[in-house]
Amino acid sequence: MTKRKPGKFSATKAVKANARERVGQPKPARVIDTEPRTGRATKHKPKLEEIIQQAES
Image (cartoon, rainbow, N blue to C red):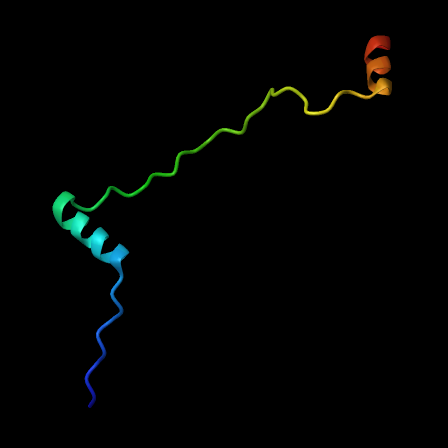
């Protein structure tokens, strides 16, 4: 059997591995439930017909 080639050197992986040894493994990220935003101002101006209908009612 032939010998396996050593993997490519990645500076990023080396730096991260070094940091994990010194500081420790980072805590896993938590998903924060965001409530849907409601009550925001409308993006477009109301149409003239809509303004007239609101004034009549």
